[in-house]
Length: 485
Ligand code: GLN
Image 1 (tube, rainbow, N blue to C red):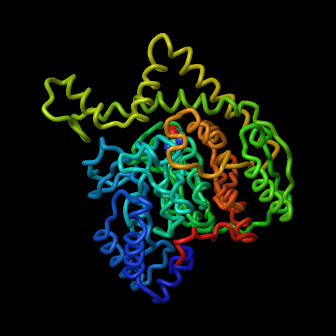
Image 2 (cartoon, rainbow, N blue to C red):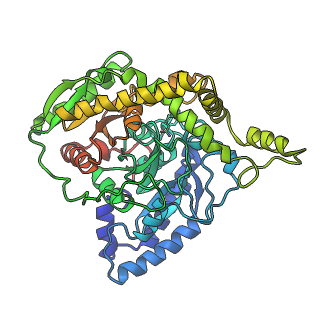
Image 3 (cartoon, protein in one colour):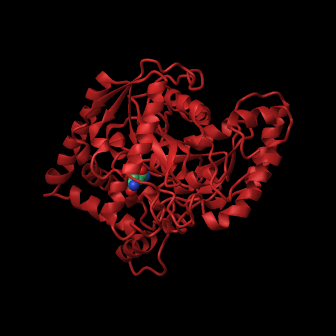
């Protein structure tokens, strides 16, 4: 049962091969068996999961046919969940139980999904290796000495090791696509505004977007269907019609125009990674696609721009964690100032503090024009690069990451080298575009991801392009050694 896709599981549940309670219990047992090493979950809610599964079984018996009823899922611990701890990977929220569900959670509950638990993540989603979590690093199931990527590292590792059928992630600068690539799964970051941010703890509000982490594009289409759509509770959610994402998965790709940005294949890209990406692009040529070289000339400005915009927004968003209303509060404060200082000093880790300091600096009087305003202008130039490219091509392809998963600790003391691991993903968030990472031929036995970037609201096209590749190849079916099912 651990090998079945959502569609197959759903058919098996309806045919009575096993119940949702049995399926859920099997996943809970597997989590017990493997998660001691992996550390992909912060919280496992066995009781809640089994109760929801029992309800799902009743719905199935009553003849309901939704494809997600009774399917176990892991939720990133950034989504508020009524009654179950939401830590955001931080000591600051180690004691926080939200009094309401995020819209993503509500919609998945309505669809009948069973939440197994909440997955480990970089603290407040700041990181690319899952090493900034207060709950300790997540290990990559392909090699326990390596990182799973971040910030949705727990979500990626849990799906790769078959400790969840699927999971959710959030992506501010690459946090769905990068860990998906490093763990060998399919990760989709939709267009900004496609999925409601209500109840998703904010990092950088103009960049944050929720998405899916699954084994296949086919599974992703089913999850996205449940998650996408306008939400009156989020003023930035898009009031755009939601297409049937499964309906166009098999569309023919003859004549598809693929743009390969020359900036994504230059210095800094591991030559072995380049080979595997080129091989994947060749697969598309066989399917009738045309390849054109394009240029995204402002690519080199994406990381520096992001590290002005994202910290600026985070310094504002994280000011709400002040020890007064929720989260960690220091012992015996002397006065209000002491309460603020010590609660925040104790509650936040080093990376989060670094971002808050950078953000407060670039927003301060005297530096605002030089840094923040300048970054906003460059952000426009970066979006314009894509707008120009999409006049010529249907999708853009390139590597998701410059290299394969790195060793735990390898980049932890060098923030800049860590930041550069998102060099191909960050511009997509600055422009608000959708992107998906799919597993391609491994590099030296370790997972690698092909990134496919689409125009605004082109999620159906991205899933179609990803799915056709997965019909031709088996990389998305590979299971890490030791996690056989
Ligand atoms: N790695 C990037 C950062 O640290 C992106 C994180 C994310 O997408 N949440 O900010």
